[in-house]
Length: 221
Length: 36
Image (cartoon, rainbow over all chains, first blue to last red; front, side, top):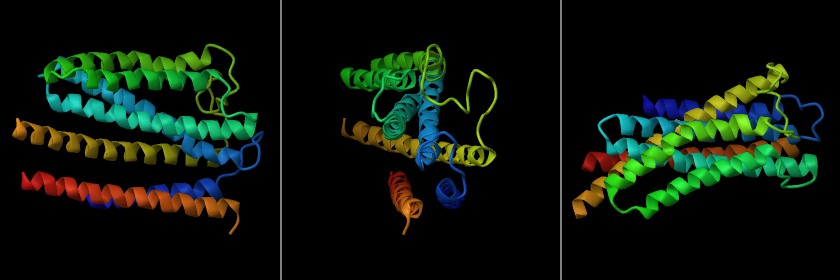
């Protein structure tokens, strides 16, 4: 059953790739084919946010519940994957910025805010490596990642809208309406759904690997 | 092969590679948990 779901995901994402390059029209006011990168850039940024929220919820459940170490490992796995997706979103965004704005990096509020969010979560990983006592590490890291439930929405949705930004805001904007061509929106939503499913698959695998690693360490000690 | 077709092909190869790697990883994790 799980194998079938995996193959369905492959088919879904393959269809998204073909639709992104051959079915969706080009966005107006974008240079050349550059708008097509948004079908991957936006979902990657979205998945990084989902990952950080997943980590926050797992950490909150760790603190509020029976201090189950699996929830701590689940949060760490989500942050690792979230950082990879945030980095990919930043790189694809820089490629797009080079085409549109003739500069890889512009200190645009959205570029800066995702970097600050990445630094916040990179500090989480640094915190994990700095504490050797497992219980103390799990407790402190859970408190830090729970704080992310406020920090991440602020950096992803609030800070980029406080000042002037060159960044397009066609999907989530202050005007309260979606300014995207219907075919483009279909591909964008389908891509976001596919990337989200991919995140939960990888997250589950990473958590199970971390569990296996923990069992191995317990066996050695 | 034109621009978008070439990029589509490269993307499909990358996605298929990641997908097959994840399937293999899933099988290995299953074996690991079964051997426990």
